[in-house]
Image (cartoon, rainbow, N blue to C red; front, top):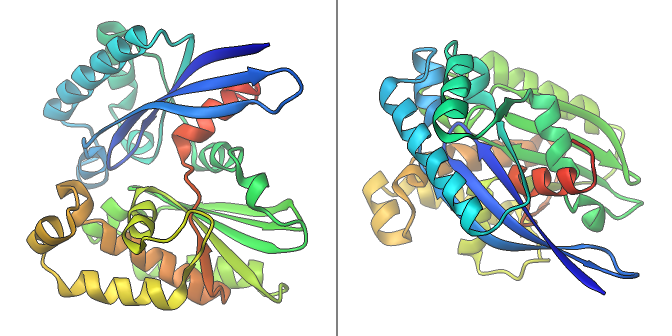
Length: 296
């Protein structure tokens, strides 16, 4: 007996907003399968507002309402049974966030929950990470967003420690991450990984997915520290326009990808990791799975 459920997740990030619609295939005696039915990404850079002036602008509120109306219609067309919408760093910090949430509920009939960094990390960690984690190895999971970066250490299949830092790509783009934050990240990584002989990174986020795609590697294969370092130098050698024209990057990816690469590079350097795995997971995948398994 096969049963298919349609679930959706809305991820309102600091750099973009995403709607993921998933087909959950239930089969007797087998583990449920999650298949992507549709993914829509809208480049509304809320972090540019929230981190620089502290509120979401009128223009971006209008764009958000339009995007949410579109997401609602798409879910209706796909016959989605259940959805959840979570907002992260930018909405956490915008002082008019509550009004924006209320307006979207009224105009687009989408209910949004603003979540903290700890919950964000927990939701992402509830994805398919257990398939990747070898029980006798140590991993540092790094999820780079526009407003924050979540670090989670796993060893012997267990979560050891987790921390969210206000060091995201949109903040870095606006020179809003001071040296003291970098020092805190370095200290946290070194303190938490020092007792482990070998650490492997697991990267999550749109930028590392793009770097992985550009490498042409097979999904299960890791990227090396040397490769990430050379890509960082290569991206830095190109202008913003060249990154769009020659690499085919979206305009809202071409400026932040360098900053994201720097975060992953530093995480590898400070943990001593030589390799980084890039599974196809993110907050929206985590929302769907956590919702299905009743964790949220």
